[in-house]
Length: 357
Ligand SMILES: Nc1ncnc2c1ncn2[C@@H]1O[C@H](COP(=O)(O)OP(=O)(O)OP(=O)(O)O)[C@@H](O)[C@H]1O
Ligand SMILES: [Mg+2]
Image (cartoon, rainbow, N blue to C red):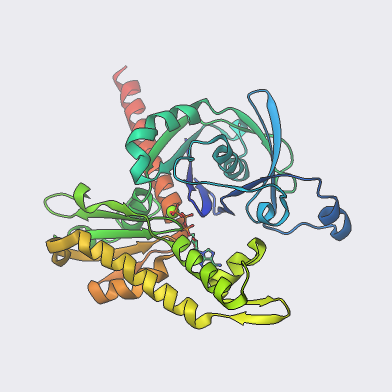
C-alpha cells in the first residue's frame, strides 16, 4: 500500500508520497475564498503558490484559499493552527489539499496516511485524531492543480509523535535501511533536533545495548521561528513607528529590510543578533535538559527549516553535528519511511498466513 507522509506544522504543511519525487509545501494558513475575478481575469495567470481548495464533505461544500493566497487575498481573518487545533475541521482542509495534490484517489489503489501530533498533545489526542482521520471521506478539487474532483479517504491511518518522523529520517535511508551503521553502533547517544515555527523537538536514541529512544531525553521546547518573528515585529514598531503590515511581515522577518512610507527601513544587524540569540537560547535549554548526559552524545542531526539557527551553537557544544538533507521535509519523509516499513511487515505477515493456509 502506498504511504502518504503529511507533517501538519504550525508554520508550513509538508507532504510526500511513496514512489514520487513530488513534494507538497504550503504555509499553514486558511482563509475563505473570493471570486478571483481580478487576479484571474486581469492578469490571466495565477501565482504558482496559489492554492484554492474546493471540498465536499458531510453533505456540505466549501471553498478556501490556503497558504500564500490566503494571506494575500482572503479578507476575513485567516485561520492558523495553534495549540489544540490539529484535529480542527480547518486543519483537515490542509490535509485534504496535500492528499489531493499527491495522491489521485482510490483509482490509484489504497493509501496509508502517516502524520504526527505535537509531543505535548500526543497522549491525549492520538486516539481521537486517528479515529477522525479514518472517518474522513471528502471530495477535493484544486483548480489549476488537477483536473477533477479527487476522493480523499484513507485505508489506514497512523499518528506518530512529531519529531520522531525527523528522527527516523535522520538515521534511516529512504528504504528504511540504516544510513550509517557506525553512528547506530557508536555506543554514545544520537540526538535529533528538529526546529520549526513554534516548537523545537528533541529526540534522543541510545545505541547500546540496543538502538532505541530514550524517553527522558526526548522533549519539546516552545521555541522556534515564531519567536524571531515576534522580535522583528517589535523592531519594526520601534524603527517605523507603526505596525508592520501583515502582507509583508515575512519579508521583514527574513530579510530585515522593507520599503515603507516612502523610505527603506533596515534592521539587518538586529535580525542577525536576534537569530544568534534565539539559536543560543534553544541550545542552552537543550544543554540544560541533558545535564550529565551531555558528555555521552556521539552524533547530532539537525532538522526543520530552522536547523541553520541552531547549527553554530550546537557545534560549540557537541562534535559531529550534521544537518539532514532537505531539513524542512524530514518529519514528512520519516513518516513515509516508517509507514512503508509497517506496510512491508503487514505484507510479510499476510504472505505467511497464505503459506500456512
Ligand atoms: N523565507 C524564509 N527564510 C528563512 N526562514 C524562513 C522563511 N520562511 C519561513 N522560515 C522559517 O521556517 C519556519 C517554518 O519551518 P518548519 O516548516 O520546519 O516549521 P513547522 O513544522 O511548520 O513548525 P512546527 O514544527 O513548530 O509545527 C518559520 O517559522 C520560519 O522561522
Ligand atoms: Mg515541524
